[in-house]
Length: 402
Image (cartoon, rainbow, N blue to C red; front, side, top):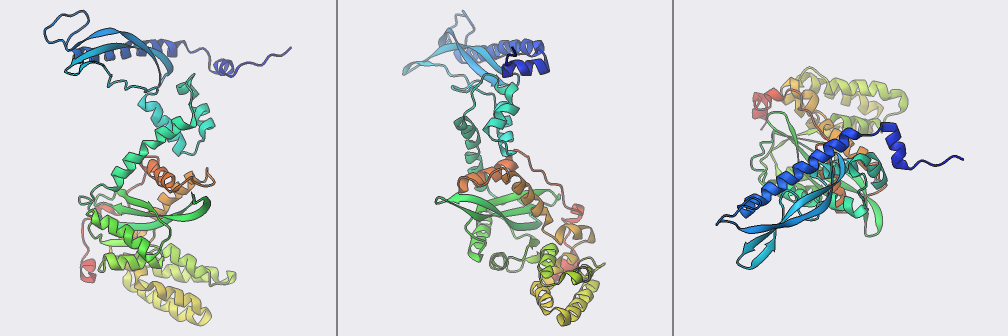
């Protein structure tokens, strides 16, 4: 008769008996005792059985605790002590092992990383079985771990931006499905991505709002300005009218670059399939020219040609105006990075990839914390923009344009 093998035994059969881990775990127990005992001696100002005039209390036995660390769950023993104070005797609390702590910080970091990567409670417990061996993992436990992000997020959102010397500012929004007032709706999270003089990209703020209206974007930009953000040299945006109007109100003289990819997609809506390739080639002559003068010639030629064949295409190109060509005023080594919103689109793509694991987010705060958590735990990394070495140099053409 075949007998079922318990899950723990099956895992041991696969990985083999881990005598080394158990030996290391014993050394960890000894080390924790040594560290905690040294901490207590420092507070008491006396070692074990030591008689001194400066003694601040006394030892009284030990207590048994369970702790999940990098080598799995361990039963450890830590010393106890009583401290003398004006109010009487008080129980000593270790800073090394705070009261009620049952997991090492590294384990909590692993749990948070798994959660932010899209794993649910069952998958987290399975993937980290070696860390959580014998240790319960409830929904509330994960909630407490993730909840620590809240204070970090609030501090991050209120930090001063006076020292942030932003050369280029990318602005865009990502749509998330969030449960609000008992109904799941799609709402935008406004994101500001700044580029420093060394080319490094830094998310300055993110905020979930009800729309991408001029008022919403205006409040978002106003918050950045109130925190000390100086006007950048260039704002790179898509074709959102509310965003463009808000930039005009916040920084009337700032240069604006309209994303050429967004504009091309918009033009494609007005062209039949058989003429798509021809229109794209004409458009690329504008956005991939060798300089501003050639780009303007290609722009004029595009309008003249397509105004006769497809008037809506010509009208759509006119709508963007010369803000489609602003990137030509910067060094050519930066053109690839400045003519599109790809820098922030890639960031938003990482956000979307993570959110796909959930049909919807429970509330607005959960959505913001999730996105911030991906940044705070460095699960999203961004490379420098092309030509960053010349970001600190203001081109002569740019000075004349301003």
